[in-house]
Length: 502
Image (tube, rainbow, N blue to C red; front, side, top):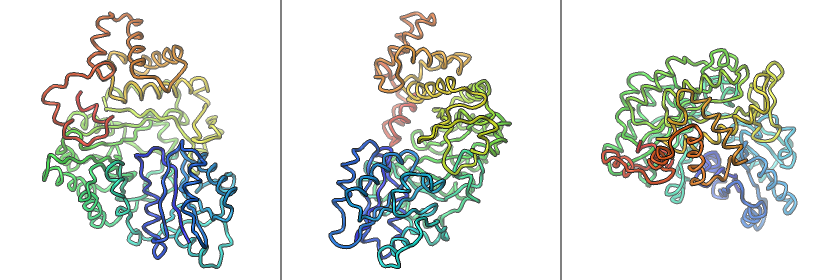
């Protein structure tokens, strides 16, 4: 017998935490369980060939696939081909994309079994039944949520290759107490913490093995401040013990909950060691109420401002366009408000209808039209027509290339002026008219286009050249001596590191 755990990651640097949880909790079947990760864009035939090369010589082979919004279409092709060439293989699906509204999905129809929700206990039990009998009669198995103490932590399953070349995903808790209707965590009743001492021992082991880049997937890292402080102290201890051997940690923060004790710990981190992802999503109170998002906007803005002024943390702040009840003017006001707070990156997202999320209840009342194909992006609302939504999609892409990349740090304020949303939308419309593209725009060409736009706006050509030459777009900038050390001593990802020199 052989059990293969597989998924298609968005890119190689992403190591699947979910599959490693499954492998860690296989019990007596763990020795027979193998992990095989692929990347979206790989040839279906190559994936199928590699999986079949690990097929059991005798007995049953089970292949479990982790299915997500970004890989469902390609995974469906893999499942279909596997069933064509090796119909005897037992295929089990799991993951958020197939845990809801599953009956209508082609990939579920192709598979033998489906585990919805938590799979730590249910997937191993299902494998035992498949291998030892009695054979399960039901196709769908609802995941059982075990006590957190019963879940075997998976971090020892990160390989030396993972530690050397990939982001390591970790979690101190699961779930979320908030009910934001565009998020799958809205279905959780609360957040469930892992035993903190055990979790910190796992972090200690990873660090001892050479891990230096940790991404926390907790939805609400700062919900329990005592826990947050102990985790931050773990990283501070490592930094203080050996400043020349830095670490980088990423956390999701609740934006309006930043007590003084947490602020004090955050101020102790050097540049290049800490990143916060902060979900604002909308600054419109009526829209927030409509999608059940509780947020003190004034406090959230105050905390972002404080973090920018008093900490070295890299801030990645999220906004969502296309929420029910929000028109283009409301979104523009929120965008301008966020730009004024000057976070390092603004992740301009377009609403997606994740399967199972309550956002669908607004479909009729607010004219929500979603793409029927993954990632189920909003196409239009009663307040934002399709053509305008496509302009927003292009805005988001160009914003990522120009603003979030860190390559136009000196040029960006000139582009935005006193009306950031309106000015960047004008640039976005012009770029699309000029290039008919939002992808595969070479950096040199993009820099040239930005320069051409500035000259069209009346800026002197020499001044344009001088401005662009100070940015990453054209030439490597001269970094002030006092700013060189954070870059040299940082393990921050390259994109975040670019922001350190400004």
